[in-house]
Every structure is written in structure tokens, then in C-alpha cells.
Image (cartoon, rainbow, N blue to C red; front, side, top):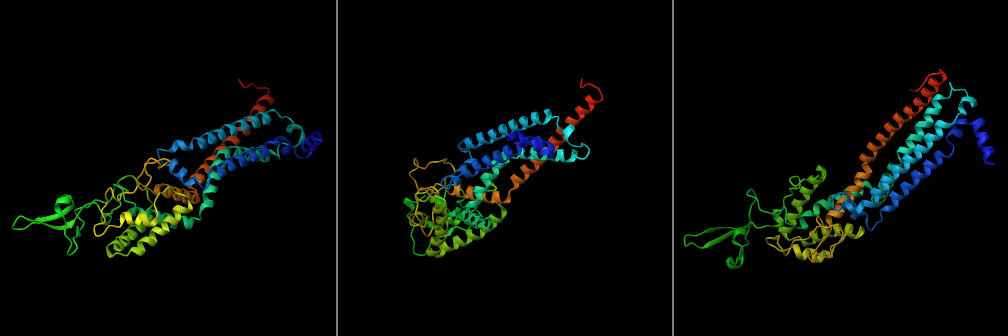
Length: 366
């Protein structure tokens, strides 16, 4: 039966006979690696892996790197097998007129080369497709705005220091400051004519002094998000000054919905988070209010007893989703694959008939 099919293809569709099983092998291989890329990301670990791939914790993705290299090796083996098969067949010289079929034969060479070169790309596309299932592009942009905007409410050791161009936080009327128990360097003061200290304002680290200096620290936050973040930062500072606790908690609630949705590591609730940072009138940033945002932790917070919330994991995850929708890397790699396929197919096709031409003329390849 199989021999009859081969004979029929050889006599009626010699181009198909010449490639036979290879297109099926190439399609199955591409689907296989697409499936690996898609299934590799689970909803429980996707956002953690996004941070791993963009940080010093990248060893976590060793498996995916190995699979990517394996896809290149398998593609190379398929290419070699097809090349041996393509060069050894002589049936074309007898079964159809060469002049009218050159372009079709080259086109098949090109298609097969494309199918082989995109095998590693199928792995990447499988992963990108899975990322796109987590959120639409518009929802991802809205989520990323919230993630950037909430930065000031997850205090760390950066961005909360007083600058000379900032106004000190005024001491409320009737409030007394115990000089003996306070760090005098955190206050603006003067001495009266009796040499007594008069406290005029607070200049220690504070949520109200938050100023994003991520550009100075090498971050690459999109300009759009920075602009929206600046607006929201001013609004949050206004809520803090005016004691609008409900609005602050509502904003925290929007963020915590994302944390719960993607199972981001945290030991905070909205109430415990709020109680930790809401300390009027100065809203100080110190050991009693600092929260670990996960930037320097790979996979486990178990050794960190202080409050934590892996905001950096959430940020990198949603940035990955947006990158997958925009597809700049995939587009570039696709163009590279097409160029490689075009050059390879022309080289293979030209070499085959150049050799035949030399031998036909009785020449030598030496």
C-alpha cells in the first residue's frame, strides 16, 4: 500500500514525493515545542518566573534555556536529514520537465527552511501565548499603572528623604516634640534668645517626601506610567495630609486584588499594611514602617520575618504581558528566520544545480 502511494506521488506529484514525511515532522516538532512553551508557565509560578528572567535569580529558568537549545539541535538534525534526502534523489530528472518546475521546487525548499528555522521561535511563541491568557493588553496597562502608583505605599530605604527644595512637614498646633527622645537631625529648629530649641518642622524620611528617582537607579519605567504615577503620588499625599483613610484603603484594595489574583507572596492584609504606614502627622519611614517589596529575594520570604509583599514580581509579570502583546522580540526573530530561510534555500537550490551543471559538462568540482 505504501509503495503504491509512493509510486503514485512520484508519477503524478513528484514535488510532494520528494519531500514526503518531512513537512509532517516539521509541523509536529513546531507544535511540540509550542506546547512546551505554553505549558511551562503555570498560574502559580508565572509572575515569579517573569521576575527571575529579569534579575540575578535567572538560574530558575535553566530548564527553559535547555529546552530552547534542544529545539535548535533538533531543528539542525531535521535539516541535515532533509538535506541528505534532497540531494540524493534523481527522480526529478525523469518525471517532470525541469524548466517549468524550478520555481516550485525552490519554493518548497524555502517553506521547509522556514519551518525548520522557526522551531525555537515556536517555543517562544508558546510562552508568549500563555502570557496573553492572563490578561488583555488594556487590563494589563491599567494593572501596571496601579502597580507603579502603589510604590510609595510600600516604603523601603529609597526615595523618602527630604530635599532642600521641599517644605518641611509643619508641626501641628498643640503638638509637643520630646527633644530628649527624638533624633534632632530629623527636625528643622531654631534657638530663641534664651537658647531654647524651637522645633519648626519635620525633615526625616517620610511618605510625604516620596520622590521617584528610578531613572537615577537605572530603571526603565515607561514614560506613560511615570506620568500617571506622578499624578497619583500627589493625590495619595493629599489623602494622607487630609486624613482620607477610606480612599487610601480603597486604593490598597485595588492593588491587593491583583496580589490575590496572581498569588503574589505577602504576609500583609489591607488593615495590617495600612496600620503600618499610616502614622500621622509625619508618616515616618523607619524600621516600624519599612516593607520588603521582594526586589532582593528570589523565591522564598520564609527567612524574612518583617512584613513583605512581592510587588516587583507583580510588576515584572504585567510588563511581560504587555511585551508579549507588543511582540517586538518575536517580530524581530521572525524577520531573522525569514532572512535565514531565504538565504539558505537559495544556497541549497543553487548548489544542487550548479553541481549537476558541472558534472553534465564533464567538468570537475576540484
